[in-house]
Image (cartoon, rainbow, N blue to C red; front, side):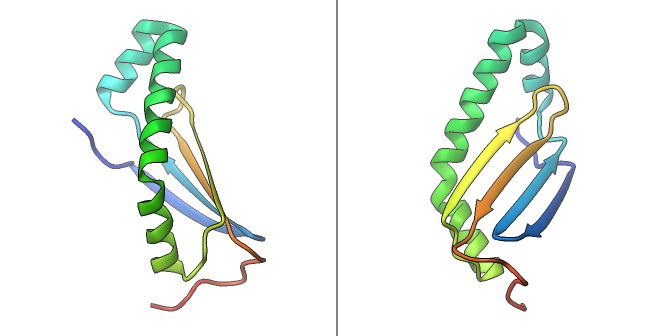
Length: 101
């Protein structure tokens, strides 16, 4: 069924935390996109968006716990061509560092 991404990178840019996930599509999702053309792509994006919106409180709490950064907004997109996903978190002010663990 599901699995995690093959590679993850996180970057602090001004008041943004950008998380880039590569290799996120499962074999079933790749097949759906290839066989159903635009409808498959739209369906996959709709399902992924719903999952992200459902998990939003959990994701925001995880970011705050790990980084000490209060999340103001979260944005998300996924490429069905490359299997890359980007999640963007905004904070109330400029980020210079995250809390030490």
